[in-house]
Amino acid sequence: MKRISPYALGATLYMPATREDILDIVLGQKLPELRSLVICLEDAVAFTDVDTALQNLRDLLLRIEAGGGRPANGPLVFVRPRDVEMAAVLNDWPLMYLIDGFVVPKLTLASLPAWASAVSDPRLALMPTLETREVFSPNAMVELGQALAQTLGERIIALRIGGNDLMGCLGLRRNPNVTLYQTPMGYVIPMLAGILGAQGFALTAPVFESIASPALLLEELELDLSHGLVGKTAIHPAQISLIHEVLRVGIEELNCARLILNESAPAVFKHNDAMCEPATHFNWATKIIERAQWHGVKQTDVSLMEPIRLAEVGR
Image (cartoon, rainbow, N blue to C red; front, side):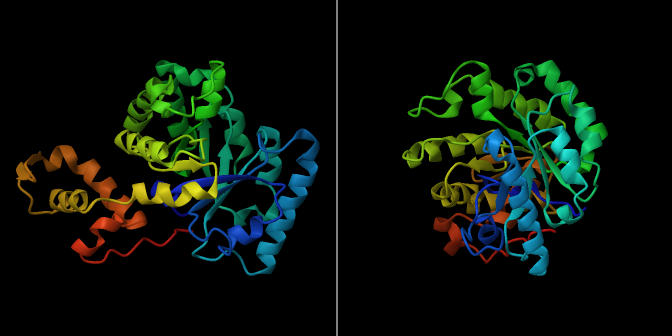
């Protein structure tokens, strides 16, 4: 399995496996700006429609194969199985290699062994979703992170934070006039960023469910970035370009990162009236460079710098 950068995900759009236009999106003919797609067989599909959804997924894979595979410039494609039993079946489908991996729903420490056994194909990358009541416990997250590193390790691209499900555990729904950080997720997200981020995992941000509030979405995206989150679930195509624009890197950030990573950089130096210490800021600078490779530089800054070549999607 080739390494997939977590920054390659960008805005991740979920869609039910029952939709008939998935192939157009996979091929980049529809929503060409989309970086990653999750074909959902779980919450987005009613129990009565599961068989139809599975047949639609099977037909999709057959059509991708008949067309010679997926285009290099298309979105990353993941499947979210309904449960561990379904995952075991999908894992053994001969054409499942045509997608990039699985999103693992509602992962817990107790369910991890069963999932690890079910998704045994090493070609499939994984994105476990943190969306159960155990997520509220720092000790549980320390243990889960350690277990994930031991069992699935390099196959994990990122951990997805399921904000709506976590709010549901508390019997709450987000007020559409506030960011998620003004809810109990204002405790959960920093805690996860600290505990699991320190263990080396990338994390993606929960969905922003108000389509009519782009200004509030931008405010939440800035908070996502300040907590080190690498991408965000999109609930509607209109959110894709906003998410990608915020993920672009500012020219001053990029220049600072390049100075820090320069082999001849002094142990401590000043840049833009701030102290830079390569030994301390190395990880930050590395992530800034990687983010810039995938998302480029903010539009207002493009004319101020030499061109950057966006990274090619690793397959």
